[in-house]
Length: 147
Image (cartoon, rainbow, N blue to C red; front, side, top):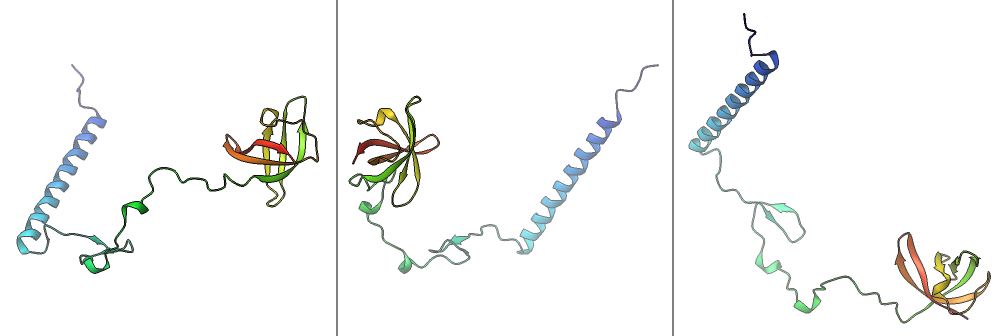
């Protein structure tokens, strides 16, 4: 005698599918009845006011803000600090490996630097001027000049 191909899992899946189909049919029927009674509106809109809040009423055209084309900035913001060099002091320098750290005199931030960015030879305690560039692990000091 051959064994039935219907397993317990297959029967359960078929029952679940049938149950979901029946629930979906009931929801569709309930929406249809509500629409016929006028309880369900077909076209409902949600508006966003000038503060970004959702509202049922359309926004007042008088509150519309005019924006000029010149005020729209496309692209990344430009760095305004190109003219000023940052002043700092060399706090650590390893000449064998060719790198070190410079501490900003005003903000006390520390910046990594490589010897290839400096024209002069540096030592610990030297005062320098430099620019910064975003590196892999933070800001790096570049274009270093001894004061």
